Amino acid sequence: MPSKLRESEFRDLLSQDRPLIDVRAPLEFMRGAFPASVNLPLLLDDERHEVGKQFKSAGQDAAIILANELVGGDNKLERLSKWKDFLKRNPSAAVYCFRGGLRSQTVQQWMIDQGIDVPLVEGGYKALRRFLLKTIERVTGQSSFMIIGGKTGSAKTHLINALNYSIDLEGLANHRGSAFGRRILGQPTQIDFENHLAIALLKLPYEKPEHLFLEDESRAIGSLSLPKEFHDKMGDSPIAMLEETLEARIETIYKDYIYSNYKDFQNQDREAAQQNFSNFLLGSLQRIQKRLGGEKFTQLHAIMNEALTHTDPGESESLHKLWIQHILCDYYDPMYEYQMNKKLNRVVYRGNRDEFLAWASHLNRDS
Image 1: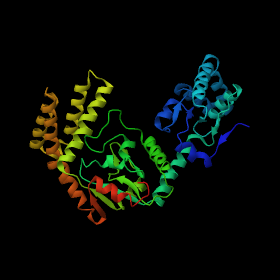
Image 2: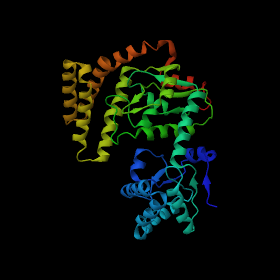
Image 3: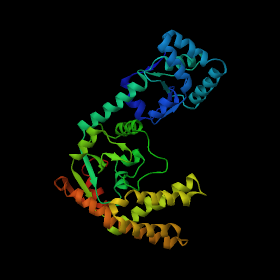
Image 4: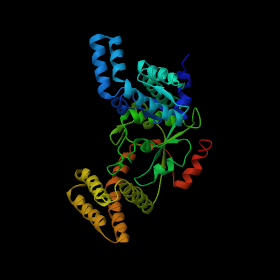
């Protein structure tokens, strides 16, 4: 009998990044999938569209006949070759379609005919997605959150990644969470973001944490939104404040938002890196022009533009750090202090990075 992976096996399947063959059409895959999945479709988008029309007009049997016609001959051989090649490189892989129905069953049977037994995910994408959403609900209900706060540039994300029992929400969203926070490769879809969050929760070292460390975030991270219940829990949780000097925060902002981002642009297109990075940085400043006010915007724009065009690397760095200092002191810090005044009753700890790590180690074992 063809093998199946049932819900009791989903945790290991997803937390261990077991390879998955997603045989849905490319458009379905683009809307949402799983980190370890690869799209090797049975039906391409136009083929699926034609089969769907046939199903509505003439029923399932007619749709199956059309599908077999569309995926026959050379098309079948080509797709068989791709599945076989992937399974040769990933013998532990499983296969799924939307509901674990005809498409994944067809691919599984074709593989059996080739002498290859690939297990089918029972319930398909829909069952895996439901399992992951339940995971977020379960962890939200069972865990205690500890929120890491601190002014912009306090290296909260770096601290999060130094703790074992933590989730880097900005990393999952591929966004640094501010007007300057966009990353070069863009953000995942909302569904992919939620799937990544749930799988990150599955990978945590303990089933029921005493404290799960998370960075203080608004519900929106770039264009993505944290699940409502999850963010509501964050908003009711205690806050540990990370306190760093202005100089240290300027250095962190420079490394993360200037040096690191510019390297990303170079890796993408070395010849156009300078122009693309300049457009990115000046465009990010433009987005907060109204909040800065005309005079402050003009001042920062001039310093930033000079930093971007200066030929001396040392002078360029100094100018970047100058506008960073201005934007921290005149914009981000006052805004953060205003927001924190409403959360002071939740603050349970204050300290710098080293002090925080020592304190956190007593909250969770192996933190």
